[in-house]
Structure formats: C-alpha cells, structure tokens
Image 1 (tube, rainbow, N blue to C red):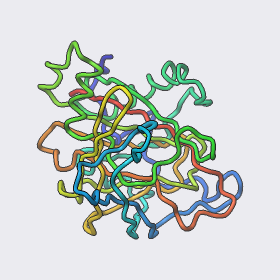
Image 2 (tube, rainbow, N blue to C red):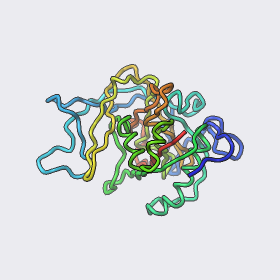
Image 3 (cartoon, rainbow, N blue to C red):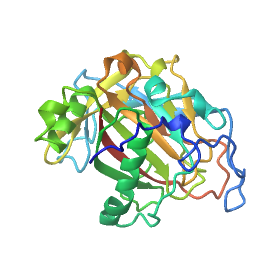
Image 4 (cartoon, helix red, strand yellow):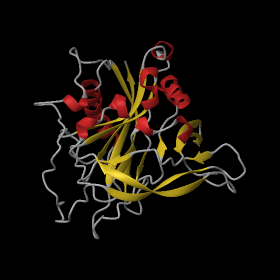
Length: 304
C-alpha cells in the first residue's frame, strides 16, 4: 500500500471536497424524533481495580478454561465530567491529544454484514483517509475490524470499561505479525496504531464513545493486561482512575463522522500523548426508546 504523491493534510484542516470538521450538527433530533443529548454531562465510568492477590492481570478474549475466571481483576466506578467535542473539534489533534475527528466522510459500504465485502470496499476508504490525514505516513496496514451492536444476540457489544487497545510491547508484536518480511526495517522508523471508529446507525444516542485527552493521562495510570487468545497472547492496557484525566465525547456522531483513536506511537517526541484511553458509557440523558448504538472500528498500523 502506497501513499499519495502529495503531502497529506491534517484531519482538522481538511477542506473543500475532502472530509471536513463540522462544528454545527444538522439537527438536534434523530430519525425517531428524539432529542440528541449534547453538551457537558457527568457519567459513571468503569476503571481498573487490581487483583486482590497481587497477580499479573489477564483477560480471556474467548472462552476461558473450565474453573478459570474470564479475568482476574475488578472494576471501580467513578463519576466523570464529560466534555462535548462538538463545536470545538479543531482544538484537538492526533499528535497533541491522541485523538482526532473527521466529519462528512463518504462511504460506498452500507450493509456492514459481510466481512469480505467490508475488506474489499470499506478498508480502501479507511486506508486513503489515514494517508490523507496523517502527514508523513507512507504505508498503512489494516489488520482487523470489530463490529459492535447493542442487541442482546450480538457477538460483540459496546465495551464499557476504560482501556487502550495496545501497549508498546503488543504494538511491536503487531508489526512482526502483520508485516514479518519488512518488520526489522519498519520498526526502525516511526510506527503508530490507530483505531478508526464510526457509528453504523447514527446519530449515536445510546452508549456514545468517550476518550481521555492523552496529555492528561499519566503513565502510572496504565496497567498492562495479558490478553489471552486460543492461539496466542496479546496485551492491552487497563486504566486506573485519576481525577486529573480530562474526558470528552463527540455528541450525536453520524455515519459520516470518523473518530481517530491513537493506541501507540513510537515517536518519543509525542510519546506521552501517544495513547488514548476510551470506553463506551451510559449517558444518563439518553431518551427512552432510543435505538442501541451500532459501530465499526478498524485498527491500522501506520508507518512514517
């Protein structure tokens, strides 16, 4: 996968025919005629609680061995003030805060029910968006995606605990796993992992996504968790509560909105801001009868 010939434009500067930041929502009612919650709100978030026996935390991604708990750590709930990004999107960037917003992004994929079609149609759109939005990037490898639905029978539901998808160790492992023939060279340059998140049935009314400004997150807040798959082990990061963290959400996200979540950045000049805790949360203002949120997140290795 190759970059465009011209220098990509930062996401918050995209103009004209390219996707743009839209600070003013087109409507404050969804298609059911229900009011879309906006503005400052206080919500309860689930943070990490260490294992009582002091052992290394783990989580089984799929079915765990008989007699073994799915995870050995607990959760602490804390009320957190959530600031609305809507109308102030240009104050944040992927380098300074480890998240960014892009609006009015077109897509030729509508169903999101067939994985092969998603890879064939939607993946190239995500690749182009990343290359256009991240200055210096020259190679993108999309390595997986997850569709989440709020319905009771959905395979994957919104995740309601604060976490980061990768740690430095698991980011390097991803490079070796997905581009083994080039890994040694690519690991010597800048590489990032970015999760591109969007709703499928927006505007989002229930279980919106919250992000913490990475510049307000301390390294001590982050706890590596062994992520156990049937055939391998990975690593994610759980997050301790810290009152110094500042939290945001993007109210009423529509299907054309894209939220970039940076999970890792090898560039040490932005290293402190290279990871963004995030979680779905229950907005206490969600109106009765609002449809459950559906979303897709595509995870990408970005080189350059």
